Length: 427
Image 1 (cartoon, rainbow, N blue to C red):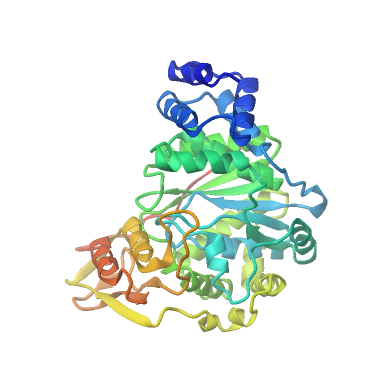
Image 2 (tube, rainbow, N blue to C red):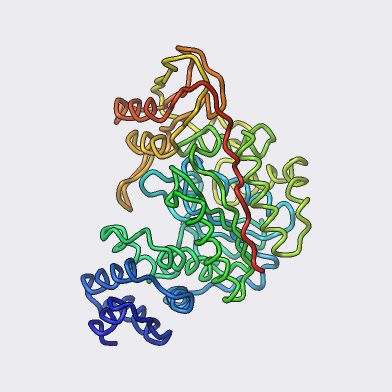
């Protein structure tokens, strides 16, 4: 491996050979290449792009840069991944639906960063819930419960961790081949045979346009299929938050109520769409998703899952046991009309300022703070009527309230935007 030649090749717009990419990733994992050279290559990729062949080779090299789980003995395994959004607690609803319908969900999940939340942070708001599991525990729970969600192991796709840390500080995150290889390398290493992707589009997502989201979805589906996995991608709207709860404990409360049939329509709709795609990929009838939800089987599976990982199962019957921050502030409408806009990005930033998210990896977060959105796009309001309730401990409150006021735009009329925009499947 000659780093300068490798960097120059991409700088000049040439395509890397697969064996050169593999050697480059090996050298990065072994710390044989300094950060400044990796950063130079990332910027070259950002501007010059990569061919489909290069992207596939990069993903495979990253996936095999560490341990690769073999889930083949567990049955029809399905993974679900979101590209990141605000109020996105869909994994907490989709996973038990899938497991109750006959699939196996053995999932590695991440923590939240910036304005987007993470499944692990949400689960850790449940008293006693354990996300740090040994490999033996992970497989045992997958066999016994059919559902296990653990924190991402450092042994899975370690190249991605190194590359992402540099992408984050070199303004090279928004590169399609780098995004696709980052997401899919972790999914391939995690071992599931089928993967249902939720690709977010809009103000609260990393991808702002439908065209960009469709292109990324098509690339990730192709990568997965070429690697021998079944993949489908649901493109979903993220101009306004998903559901009405944004935070950690408050989102778990909403997920539980959704599993009990009492959740917001948009969260229910998206969760059923993603679960149906996951079941279809492993040959289980799609209608079993709705059956699992409406029969209560998915809620029962979630209760079993929480107890198996050390959490207090009483929260499933009494979601209010999940403690929220004691301070409550309100945002009220400044005019009569209809909610015309609810900027998901600003809502996510508000929770971040309250301490419910992290600016840098590894920072502690406050699981109890959050926002409950009483009004969303298309809802009529009167001047002085409650728009949002804020649970806080004083930290960042004034800034959070200002962000929420700016997030809401009251107009003469508006319709809620469509949630599921399209589905990308393999040909």
